[in-house]
Length: 465
Image 1 (cartoon, rainbow, N blue to C red):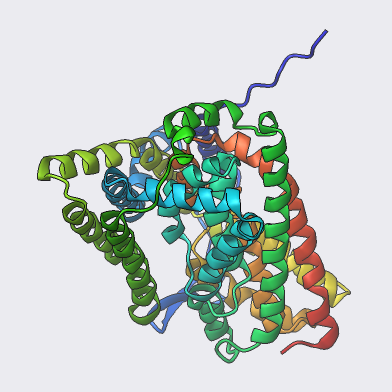
Image 2 (image 1 turned 45 degrees about the vertical axis):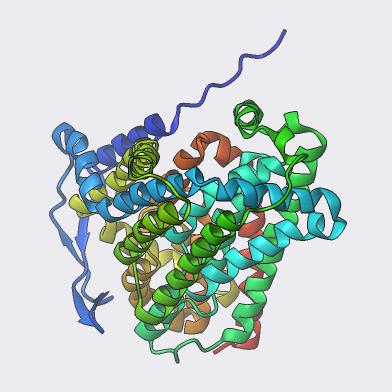
C-alpha cells in the first residue's frame, strides 16, 4: 500500500497564507519604533531610541488591501519584469538566442573541456556580478536564456534558474566590493570603506565553489537520470518545443544573429557600467532593455507589427509573475503598517549576548537571517540593523567587521524565502512552484548555513578588524 502523496499549495496560496499569518500576528506582537536620522541621504536608526508605541492590528480589510499596496510599492520591479519580459520576447523573435544556444550545445557535445567548464564559468561570472556591483534583480532576465540552454545541454530547468539566480545571490551575500551591502554597512558603523577585502575574498571563493560543486553534482545526476529531476514533466513539454533534433543540423550563427547578440552583449556591458559608474537602478535598466528591444527588432528585420506583438506577448506572459511579486511585497507592507518590525528587531537583540564571542557572531548571523525574511534590500537591512548590531558587537567582543560579515551572510537565505520578490518572481518566470524549489534548495541551504557558521570563526579568533 502506498502512502498518500502530500500536496503542497501553489505559490499564490502559500504567500496568501503567510500574509494571513502575519496579519494574525499583528494582534499579539506589541508595537515598537526606533527614531532615525539621515546619514548621507539614507535613514539610519538610533539604537538607543527604541520605545513602545501602539500597535495597529491588521484586520480583514487590511489583509485584503495589502496585495494592492504591495503592487504599488513593488511597482518598479514589476514594471521592470514586464518590460524585460517584452524585450526578451523580441530578442527571442529574432532567433538569435536560439542560434547561440545551439552553438553552445554543439560545443558542449564535442568538447570535454566545454562540458566541464560551462557551469563553473557562468556561475563564477554571476557570482562576481553580485560581489562587485550588487547584481540582484539584474539576474532575472537571464533566466529566460539559461533555461533553454540548460535543456539543450540535457540538464533541467532548475539548473537553468540556479546558474544566474543562485550565482548572483551567493555573490551578493558574500560580497567583497558590493556598495549596496558592504559599502553601506561599513559606512554606517565607521569601518573604512571596503576594508577587510582579503578575508571577504576567501569567503566569496568558498561560497562560490560550494555552489558550483553542488550544481555540477546535481546536473550530472539529472543528465544520467532525467526522471530524477523534480521538474521532469515540465521540462519534457519544454524540450518538445525546443526541437533538439535541429541541433544536429545546426550550421552556425548567421551574421544577422551575430549582430543581434552583439547588441545584447553591449546592452549588458552598458548595464554593468551604468550600475557601477552612475548607480543606475531599475528605471534606467528597464529603459536600457526597452531601447535594446527596438534596436534588435530593427537589426533582426522584424516588422513594426511583429516587434510590438512580440513585446506585448512577452509582457503578458509575466503578468502572473507580477502578481506574485506584489503578494510577496504585501507581507512586508502589513508588518510595517502594524508597527511590529522594529519591535521584533528589538526583541531579537538580547539573543546576541553570549559568553563566547564566536557564538555571539554566529547568533548575529542567525538573527540577520530571520530579519532577511522581512527585509530583502541590502541597503535597507544595513540601515535598519547595523546601527544596533555594531554597539552590541562591541559589548560581546566581536569586531564590527565581523558583525558586517554576519549581516552579509544573513542574505544567503534570499534564494529560498517566499517573501522575496526576486525569488518568487524568478520562480514564476521559470514556471517552477516555490514548494518544488524549496525542497530542492534544502540541502544547499543547510550547506550554506554550516559554511556561514564556520566562516565566522576565524575572524573572531584573529581579531579581524
